Amino acid sequence: MGKKTKIKINKGSEPEIKEEIPAEEPEISAEEEQEAVTGLSQEDFDKLNAELEDAKKKAQENLESWQHERADFSNYKKRIERDQEVSKNKYKEDVLKKFLPVLDDLELAYAHRPEEGDAAAWAEGIELIIRKFKSLLENDGLTKIDVKAGDKLDPNIHMAVSLEENDEFGSDEVIEVLQDGYRMGEKIVRPAMVRVAK
Image (spheres, rainbow, N blue to C red):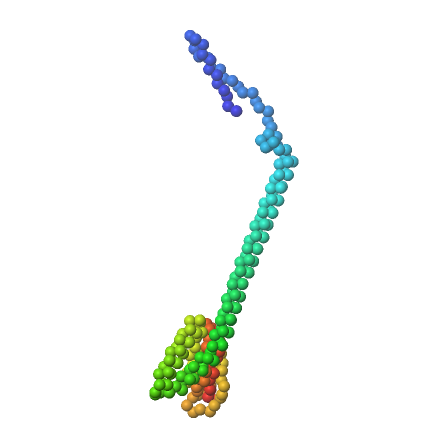
């Protein structure tokens, strides 16, 4: 604590300056000072500190548990969405696959269409129906597998229904496509049915 200075002024005389020396304050310990400031004894203060540390640990555990549960829920949600997408695509694939024999029959009928007369005009209508049908299938993700005579046999996309001797084609080459194959994305919905040379 600093010194205090008093100035006393009497009428008609010089001001009188007196310095007061402060009384020394008794020294107190850190514990006593803490108790004076907080109103708590050292024992109570230590107890409160321990409770605070326990509360901090519990809060950290709760945070970690919450983060773990949140991650688990996020993974669960992604798995459900993925499973739903797979189920949706499988269902779509199954439905579209049922229409393929109808398309095959229409294409077979069109391949044997009459060239002249009233039936020729009717065959043009069949061609329009086939184009619409293919467009509908393509819009739903079903695409025709491009296979032609001379291609090498690929068991992933071809289903060989016969092996024949043929001088025009090499071994394991497609002679003729009997039925078109289809895929949805990378998945083969139906392999192309082919005749293959020995």
